[in-house]
Image (cartoon, rainbow, N blue to C red; front, side):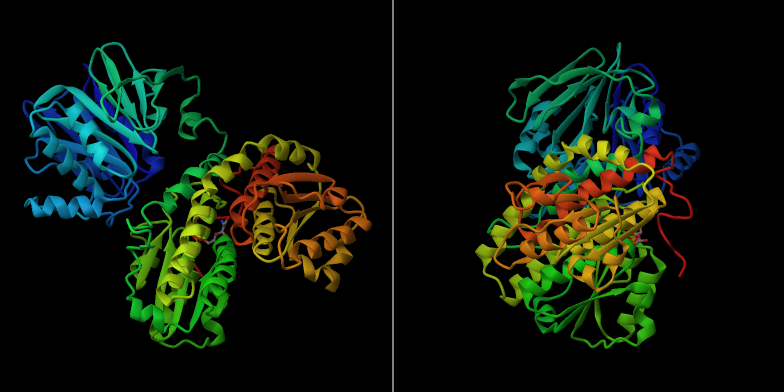
Length: 614
Ligand code: AGP
């Protein structure tokens, strides 16, 4: 989730681009870069780290004055956050400069094709491949718009691309597929940005682009086309947000924005995971198939929300791979002298990649000869660096302290690991794996459906304002969801909240149930295994003792209706994947209740986003 800026007009492009990047830095700050068109050449600079590093470099070695340019602030996906991997990337003849957000799924094939034509690629990024590809089209004698259209027809995945051509000082050309891009409409100048925050101080008139469109901005105009070169139109609108709302995409909190970003984040985390023949490919898993086949035990270690993702991983991996999985709190792990061998795979889950408890646990595991695979959202952070392999979750930066899209994308990574492991071990047939992958690819649409009912959840939060305690019940993969729902509420609303495995209720916790106590019940989908029926009995038991039941149940589940005081419908999905939809109303509830209570949702008291002390 990088930040992108483009400008053509009469002002200093450097000033406009740098200011735009500052507004977009919340989208990523692994590196920053700028390219300007200067009398037939590209002048560019880029630096790893925050924008301030780039600004310092430009101060020491100024760029020429120019009124056309592009810029980028990076959230690393392909390649470590280094100077070399920073954007912009140039084409082979350095005629074209390109910035990019997203993932080009078939970049390895394009790279091989270009290398066969003696293109020398200097970085590990998919972006540089695209830069060479577009410049190769330019070499055919077409203009940048046509070159961009032709290159886009060859690329798969999700991308926003913004380019300038040193031979054409009048146009900036951009393209988008499944990745954000807006045009800012000025007088004698026009702008491009990942979101309106990039240009809101210059203009509030914007044009939203459709899917698979190319846009060409000049000083005097904006032209939109399809990837096939047919004329097209964007949707014009007026922006009435202030700057801080613009950064949050109109939401009051980063957390709420991140909740609503989840369909996109889940889709991104699934991108590029299957090859042309449909087999799963996890490039970042640097463990050989032989190594993986030798594994006889998996131990998942993590903290907080990431720990709950690990609990779901246990259900999935054991079911699909028939390998025993233990799930451990990272902070407890090394103190109990765990049994670790070379055949143990330790999976460390961490959004930030910097959690000290998790880091110490993986160091201990490696010192005992076990292999460590990290599931992480932050490219280049310590935990993936110190692991043998990594699956990045591609959620983009998570700014709200309470994890939301981080969690959902961790779940996706856990499913991918389980399916990949099953493929290597041969415990599932290829068509079964493909069927589950198809179901996973439907999840962004299902999450969208759940989000479209946010108002019902908000109304309920209003109703429960003032409640001193809330319980959450779940079974199977719904149990970690119950724990996550309770954690969100504790973190944000500072009230007593507890999650239970529903079957455990009668062994003690049911004594807590009293008149009016709100209990969220995550009802498993109906199936062959009696899970659903047992959950319904548990719900009857608490209701008989005065609890108010808020039930999350799949569409068409009529058996739950008599026992639900409030019924929130979930799309029909398999039980193992249900956490991807069932967690969302709980996040919305906690966010809304905390907002109504007047709490700072993005920075709850006593908490830090990344816990770097043990
Ligand atoms: C989640 O809402 C929390 N803020 C917290 O539990 C978090 O998940 C935990 O500290 C682990 O962080 P990590 O994923 O960055 O390692």
